[in-house]
Image (cartoon, rainbow over all chains, first blue to last red; front, side):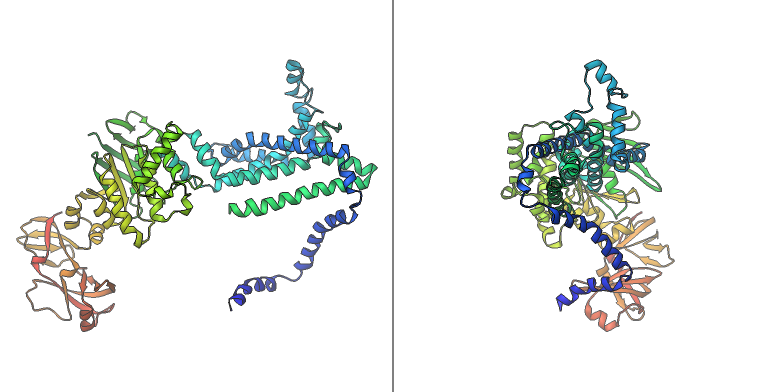
Length: 273
Length: 351
């Protein structure tokens, strides 16, 4: 009896669907799944170990992991305060600022790379001073990889954390204030811990985006083995000479993506709600 | 005045709050009133969570806020503790860390804060729960942790916003008795916001009834419950309240009817009497009851072992009768009856 009752809502949902939508939805699913199936089907399982333990692969992987992590840290450092300003601030132009935050989301990454050049390149509006005063040139360095990745990944963190802050109960902040906590102490001991799941989810998204970054990276940082040639760049180059290697490396990135998805699903997205 | 001395006005759209409040050290004042009367707004002003538009708040001789001199002390700098309606215990901190929070925020070192938090938890009887997160505490336990947390920094003023509202009837009684004990032992000024008359009577030394943003009545629980001055208070304390003009032991009511009383008041007066003092008859009574009015039954509800009957008519009254009387008179909504009250059962006092 109970099982029948439980089954009823889903049955009604299926019968309520306009039939024409089902095949179209199936096309969408196929479209999403087929490339992944293709990747798995073409994976050279026998030589997989060799390809992945090559020096170039390991070097690219190590560089990718380090740069994506550094970029995530940089995003946390400035992104959490920005999210706080967007969520809690009350000032004119806030919606404009929110639109600015989403620029890297809609901007083609290559254009982002070009834009970074115009700002931080040797002749860029800021980069020229870095060069003149410190003799420092950012482009085509590992630091440039981190900057490019942080640029495209920052919105993911900011949007996730801002959402968490908006959902957080501000009365806890009031309670902290009545206990003598300064705003900074409240932020550190109450606000931030309460939105920790949101920050964690945002960090994972941010990290995943940084790890996969290609366009802005290759434009702004180039592809020097060991210093700026990250996994996605390595995959792109390998595809032209050694497609099997490209597929093997892609599989590795796919595994990372799946891991991120699983992590987000099981740990944070459900726990936060 | 070394306790609390406040006179605040807050305008919020069409709502105006204008209340003066004095609370001596060691005194517990209950702000009693219906929802939306402005009680919580006043509490927020006292805590510094809401600026007042006009007026002042002084505590122990120090100015916390004064619109005339534009002085204002931020919430975190006020020696004020608050127990919030749903306690707002920090969910990510243990009971001990919650209680220690105010001390840590004010710069007390970790070991001392922890020690004092443990002492407070001991005082509210929750030593065994020091390491528990709020999510694992019952409502009554959470309330006691919230009280300990508010008291730990030793505030000069303690504010409690509906401290018992979130509890079920079963735990409420015990928690209320505990709260009363802790408030009695507290030497600062305490303000309890509640809409429950019994909570207010049990907890407070003095009641301040707030209605529509203004003080409607204030006094000791005994005064307020014996001589209600508004319809709301009368309902809270369970009395019928009529208003009229007294002349020679007779009161002419606003609706046109008259009540014979035994008082000697003259002029604008209130007449109060208990629902149990009202007797119902199916026809015009011919008894020693000197006051009788025709009315129509509006509602019939069981309250414990009595039945509460509300009447409409020239003199709207509430009567508590026995179930037997309900059966005998065939009482139900719409029944026409006569209500009678003896003059000796009424209390008359100046309005």
